[in-house]
Length: 516
Image 1 (spheres, rainbow, N blue to C red):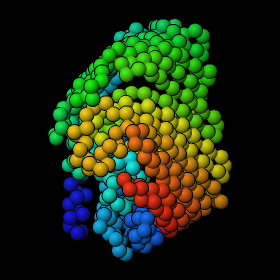
Image 2: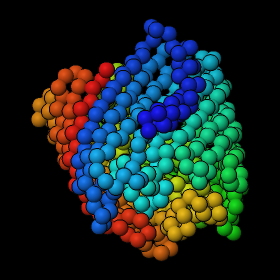
Image 3: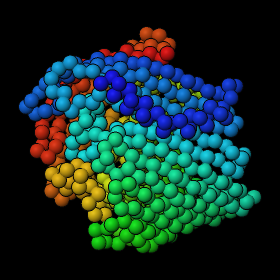
Image 4: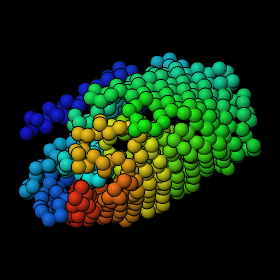
């Protein structure tokens, strides 16, 4: 088993090699660069490891997780890498669907080829995703293979940027990316295509404009290929110092095996962009595209102790597109906005954020949506709200989401993905949920944490509903600058599967982690 696990982990490392090689070549020793190896060991006892309704089995789970994080920059390159490998061991019965290992990584970098003209952006990541919206989700599926697949993506994107004085600014980009899963029934694919943007420069004081075009061809290994083409012209007119009127018009075209409805047509929208201060923004649009009425919202506000964000979007997309261009909002990203005023240097700010997360014990990511696998095109309407609050001894992270997916393409590509019984459940789905985490710092080395997560998935055709809730409480102790420990109690309940298996589970875990 050990040999097999090692081969699985090593087999995923080549996806990081092109980015790592580029960083080693162009990043000399005198550049700002921080590499932090780490190791953590977690012991967890749970009274219902398989989340069953009747066959409850207690189990002791050991998790060993080596990891590494690195980020740096110099005149020519900037990049970051976070990677970890979890190895699981079990004492107790019912281990048929248990995971033996998990590898996660997230790497991104930019290479400056010609200053202020040509750049190359690259990224690679791997994460665990739910197969069905009605199975175990999130941390409840951490140790199970029942409803999860490991999805890896990579992308490389050379781009040329040209400024035409103060008149306009142009960007020409070509993107090549790939998405694949560790289960062949999800369609591994590659995509490529150009995109172009021409935007008004500083000489356009009252009237601004932006012309964009993008095309993408998706080559699937197991299913029919697809393509998309989008063109849009955006205009804005300044009424006064804080308010601009906005309008847009364009054409969208999608080539896939549809259910019989339209797959292309014109689009338009109108709205306003209000920025009363440098810390507050409200951008509202309403209009139509070929599927009917649509709209968009972006609202954000930053104060001395809070960062708040509210968004709404309505678009035609795929899970593949979301994996290739993830939209998940992480805690570090919001803290970056909060700390930007007091710590203007990006490198120093990154170190301060890492230290802050270690002390407070706040989660690294905000749960905005519970994504699940499908090879189909769908229309997705999604609203998200999030807030980070930081005071002298209290810190809170809050997020909530609501999303609705309605499929647009035929379902042959998903017949074997979730099985015939669960196939219809993933068709048209509405999901809601929220996550709140609070940390109270008793002193400089000790903090108490509490969190609550709740999700609800409803099939719009059959009205089948599945919900899950998790409550956690813990204590975090910093023993030294490089070592800390966490003790956590968790209670989870909900239902999952076609037959609505109700479950409740309690667990206690202890983690010792160290930077090496």
